[in-house]
Length: 423
Ligand SMILES: Nc1ncnc2c1ncn2[C@@H]1O[C@H](COP(=O)(O)OP(=O)(O)OP(=O)(O)O)[C@@H](O)[C@H]1O
Ligand SMILES: [Mg+2]
Image 1 (cartoon, helix red, strand yellow):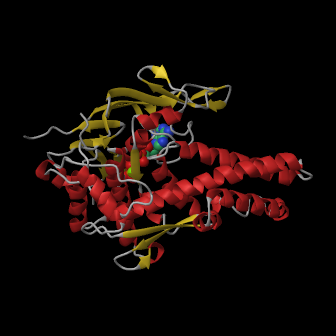
Image 2: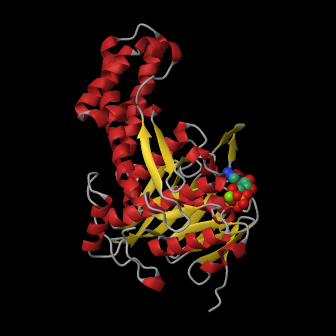
C-alpha cells in the first residue's frame, strides 16, 4: 500500500504518480512517498432521481460523506447504487437497457405499444476543480439514446462523464465472477481500464463493430474481399490496442494487489489469450500482423461457426489467491469475495497514487457476506483509502462501526429517508 493515511480522520495525506508499466512495486511506493498533495476523493454530494426504477422523485443530500442504505428486500437499495453507476460511462451496474430503468408506473402506452417515459439521474459532484452538476437520462418517448448534461449543457457523449466521476462497484452477481464465463471477467477488467484510459471503450466498440460486420459478410457468403480485409485490419489494430491496455492495467494493478491487507488476500492477475502472447513475444506491430494473418486464415471456419476464432474478445482474466497459492475458481465463496474486494480496494489505492483521484465505491450487499472480523477490516480499509462509499444491506446493525462517519438512510416504499444523527 502506497498511500499514507492521517490516522483517525482517515484522510489520505500523500499520494503520487506510480509510474509506467515497467515500474516495480518498490518504485510505486517510492514515487508515492516522494509526491505531495492528497488524492482527491470523487464524491456525489447530492443525488436526484426522477422516474427512475421504483422512485418517482427522490433527493439525497450527502455532503460528500459515505452513505449506508438499509431496508428490506425489494426496498430499492440497489436501485440507488445503479443510479450512481449511471453517472459514469457505460450501462451501469445492472447493464440494463435504457427503457428498463424507467419507472413502470410512468410508462405511457401509445396506441397499445409501451413507450418508455423520460427518466433522469442528476447529481452535484465534487471534482478536483470544483463542484459540477451532472446528469443523465432518457429524453422521452422515442429517444433511445441516453442524454448527458454537464453544468446545464448537453454533452456530446457519455465519455464526458468520466471527467467528473469515477466509480467502481461490487454486486452480489459478481460473486460468480471467477466461476461464470469469460465475458463477465473481461467486462470487469475493462471497467478497471476505463478508470485510467477513457479511450478504451471507444477501441472496444470499434473492434466489436468491425467483428460484427465481418461476421455478417462471412455469413452472407461471397464477401467483398477488400471490405473484409479492411474490417480485419481494424480488428487487428484496435484489437491489439485493447489487449495492450488490458495487459498494462493488469501489470500495474498486480503491483498494488500482490500483498495481503488484513483479511484481504494478495492476488495475482494474469490475462491470457493469443494476442497477449504475441504482445509478450514481440512488438505491437508484429502482434497486429499476427492477428491480421490469423483472421484471414480463419475466414472459412468463422463463416461456418460465426464470430471470430481469434482476438481479444476471447481472452480471459485469471486471478490467483496468493496466500493459498490457488486459482480463484477453486477458492471458497467467501475467499472469492475477499479476492474481489482486495482487487477493488487495490484499484482505489492505485487510482489515488497514479491519478490523485479516489473513485466512488458502490458496494452492494458486501457486508452481509463477511464475518465480523472481515467486515470491520473492510470498514477500516475504506476509511484509510478515503473513498466515498455507498453501502447497502438489510441489517442496519452490521454497519454500526460506521456511525458518525457515514450517513445512514432507510429505504422503503419508494422513499429514501435520512436517519437523524445523534451527536
Ligand atoms: N422500472 C421499474 N419501475 C418500477 N419499479 C421497479 C423497476 N425496476 C425495478 N423496480 C422495483 O424495484 C425494486 C427492487 O429494488 P432493488 O433491487 O433496489 O431492491 P433492494 O432494496 O436492493 O432489494 P434486495 O435487498 O433484495 O437486494 C423491486 O420491487 C422492483 O419491482
Ligand atoms: Mg439489492
